[in-house]
Image (cartoon, rainbow, N blue to C red):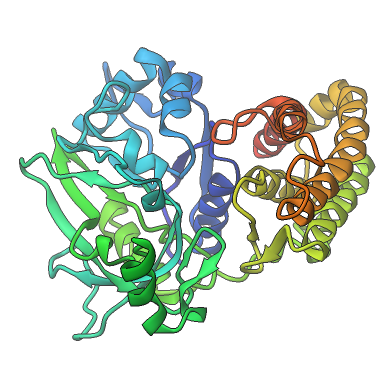
Length: 425
């Protein structure tokens, strides 16, 4: 069987999206090397060939997550190294936040001359699920034979078309059957209601504001090139997206990549059904059980709800994404065979992690139930639960809604580092 080339994946501040990309690439047969911004700044994307540095792998994949935090982890040296890597023939594939990182703005890589579009209305950033896409024929687009592919987006950014030599591979066409705005499934809203909402309340939830805007683009940079996608083509069990991912991986690496569907990713499945020789720390297995119980508690009080096998949805204002990140990281950590570096690292931080976990789960249970009570009493007793107190407790436990922090953030960083070290020999 033909050996597929290795692919580098930027690990910093990717969380569930980094795990999803890593998992998809491995499922498709690619060897994957996780790299951090500091590694890149110190030459991880290059190898010495004679007296010159050449790309060490054909492709760098940058998953979703905060583009701003990724840029900070890279620093100016890391950003310069990525530009040099692509200019010398490397390829860059960015999903969502990874796409935003490659754009031309204050903290971007400037691989692509386009910028990020602003959000005049917050609703534009609350979309998730699958959309019908209009593909543009070309070498980087599969032959859909006139069919409209269904592609997933998870709270995406948007491109600002600034001209230049950028090829559009796909545009938004319309919401598909599982499209949501915040915690509202559009398929559950009768079509005539949209018109009534617009006429009576001035609310537009039809998502027609998406139609025609760019979803996937590509371009050249020096001897290399980039593909930037606000669709998460690595999403599990998304056949059209996975087909496009296989096609792109073939074009970007030069390898023959058979079409395949990324398998289901059930974060509530038994974690010990992992790699051969898996022997996760008992404390991680124990606290993973508590994390699942916490999510199920939220679901029983209609604060969380199942979106997919790998994603829990949440009511607006709740730290659902941050909880999803930690659940995914803990589940992954319990399925991997730990390398010696990972084992040594865990032994050094286990006591601190357990202290944080004791605090987090005890306080978060009370926080979620207080939110539930506040929502119940809001119509008749709006001041019964101290909203300011709830906000302070959320900040303490979860940090900033977008960038994280707090007690959960400290736990997340430890588990992410453990997963990262599991790959190292």
